Image (cartoon, rainbow, N blue to C red; front, side):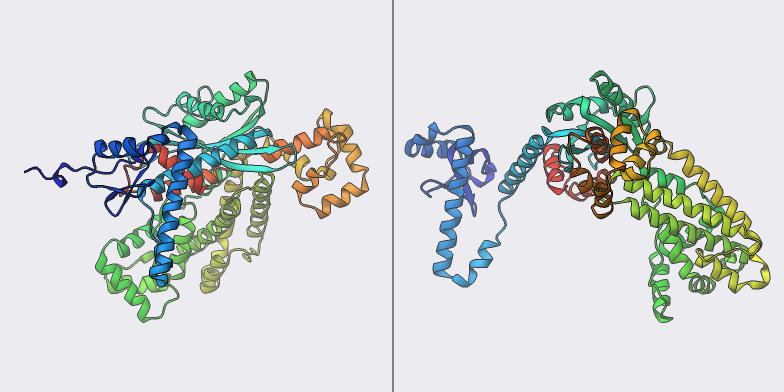
Amino acid sequence: RRKVDSEGRRFQDRWKVEYFFTEIENHCVCLICQETVAVYKEFNVKRHYQSRHSTYDKLTGHDRSEKLKQLEAVLIECVMKMVENICPEKKQEFANICLARNTVARRIEEISSDIKRQLTSKGVDFDFFSIACDESTDLSDTAQLLIFMRGVDDEMNVTEELLDLQSLTDQTRGKDLFVSVSSAIDDMKLPWNKVTGIITDGAPAMVGERSGLSTLICNKVIEEGGKAIKLHCIIHQQVLCAKHLKYDHVMKPVLKTINFIRSKALCHRQFKQFLLDIQAEYEDVLYHNDVRWLSRGSALQRFYSLRKEIGEFLETKGQPMRELSDPIWLADLGFLVDITKHLNVLNTSLQGKDAAVNQLYSHLKAFGTKLQLFIRQLSQTQPNTIHFSALQEIMNSFPQDNISAQTSRYAADIASLAGEFKRRFQDFAAIEKEISLFSSPFSVDPEDAPDQLQLELIELHCDSELRSRHQQLSLVNFYRQLDKSRFQEIRTLAKKMLSLFGSTYMCEKTFSAMNFNKNRMRTRLSDSHLRDILRIKT
């Protein structure tokens, strides 16, 4: 005899909307009359609905979905009332019961749709907006293109949200990415002439001069009567500048030693126990991951702090590290630790959501000024290493080796680093005047300003009350309170500057969330559900 269980029949999620049925503890239950159908078979479910509840056929579309929500809410309320009467002490436990997977999925879809509707309604009021794009591959080898939008309305309200996640199953050329971005912008009904800029991670498909995504978008904006600028993510450029200081003669022995300690379980256990026995400051060394922005500085700092303990441990293993007894190599290590520490501080200051482009550029200019200070101090006859604590410690430990003679080489390396920063950030330098005019309007000579701003800038300079407001209020609130008819051009400039992205930080952060949600245990997560999850997450 055939068994029903062997047929693998399951509850179908569409039965909820079509027949008002739900699944409760492996039983198919009617939400209208609470009767149970014995077998998971659509014929039985349909017959029950048509014979007893056919009057509900008049409900369609949105009305039918709303009725389903009401019936589910009534069912939950009845269950909670029953629990409250029978076993009130278990009420909280029942309230914490997880919802069915289909219910969770549906609610995520509804929340995502509501967020998209809100963003669409806000987009109508945007005077200007810019986009940030980045592409990465998930665990199912699907190319995922993240598109973030930063828009500003007439009241200087800034909105920074995920515009769309586009899945590309074929090639990821510039024109393929452009089609995806165009689809996302057109779907939200955003006018192309309001696009002020695009920022990317600098990949060839993104920044190609002829067919890169940035070029194609800027050309499209020009065709629509607007003007957009291309920017390379300020954080990615900072990381590339940091790699300019290779110091392979320091990094290779350090990484070789770290890998020797951590690659074998027995050696790693013995090293951690060794540090525990001698009560060292740290419990372990750190792996270096070239992809992670702060990894190099963290790994070097930990190695430097444990250099004596590492030397002693390697001696017991018969693998002495000769570099640890070389004062010049140790000085190079100390210098590299210090300069990467400064670079990590800069990188951290550039991270964060809702950061305006003028704030990021000010951090960059401040770091450039610091580099010039370091060059002057290390080039002196008596070098000043006050900002290089690790190097100073090595110099004090080996006074007889005249390590101070090496500081001129360090000054030259910093000068080379400063040149690399200047070379890479030319796109931000090109809009430096606009940034200065936006962030410090009272410090700009009206004659140096664009023609359409000169008269309004003179009015602004001569208004003592506005000068006082500029000192007291935040920059956004200052521009928000400017008279719209009197300072129309200045407000337009402010809105354009506020709409610009300075980095693709939000894209990188969202990719981390993507990898967390679509992990090796959930590779079958659909692209649409992944988009809904990330829209809610951001």
